[in-house]
Amino acid sequence: MSTSLIQRFVVVGISGLLLAACSPTHGLKPIPPVTGSYHLGAGDQIRILTYNDPQLSNSFSVSDAGTIAFPLLGTVTAAGQTPSDFAAFLGNQLGTRGLLHKPSVSVEVMQYRPVFVLGEVQKPGQDNYLPGMTMETVVALAGGYTYRAIKNPASVVRTEGTPDGRPMKGKISEETYLAPGDVITIYERFF
Image (cartoon, rainbow, N blue to C red; front, side, top):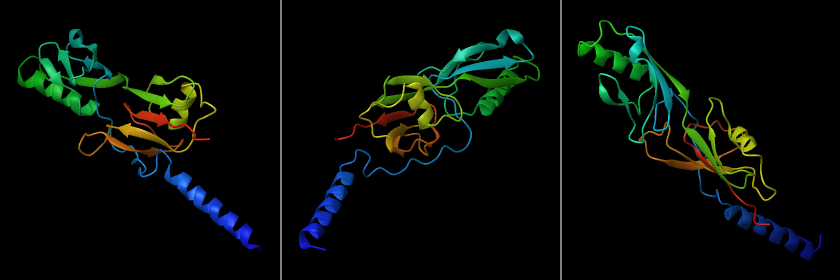
C-alpha cells in the first residue's frame, strides 16, 4: 500500500469522527424507557364515574395547574397521580366528608396529553398520544421524514416518569416507546 493511500484512509477516518462529533445528538444519553404506571398531567381528558351518584359522573380536562373542578369537592389536584390513585382519593374525599355513603369511583383516561414532533418531518406539530406509540409511529403520523432528515437518532424532551418531575433531554431511536407530552426533534443532515 502506498503512503498516499494510507494518508487518505487516515483523513477519511478522522473526518468521519469529526462529523460524528458534530451530530446534534452528540453528548446526549439514551432516554430511559418509560416504566411504571401512567400519571395524570395537564391536558389529559379523563372520565370519572361515581357509581353511587351518576349525577357526579362526567368528563373533565386536567388544567394547566394540574387540577379539575369536581362537583361537591371543588378544585382537586389530579396531576402526578395514577388514575386508580386519583379514583381512590376522590372516593375517600366523598366518603370522609359525608357526601356519599360507601362511594365507588373509577377514573379512566379518555385522551392523553399530545406528543409533539418538530424539525425534519413533512407536517411538524402535535399528535394524540396512544399507548405503545413509538418515534416511528409519530413520524408516520407527521407525514414521514423530509429528504434532509437524520432518521436515527433524534432527541426528545420528556417530563413523564422522570424521577424529580423535571424535564429530561436524551436521544431516541425509531423503536423507542414515547410518553405523553414528549417533544421529539428530528434533525437535518449537514450534506
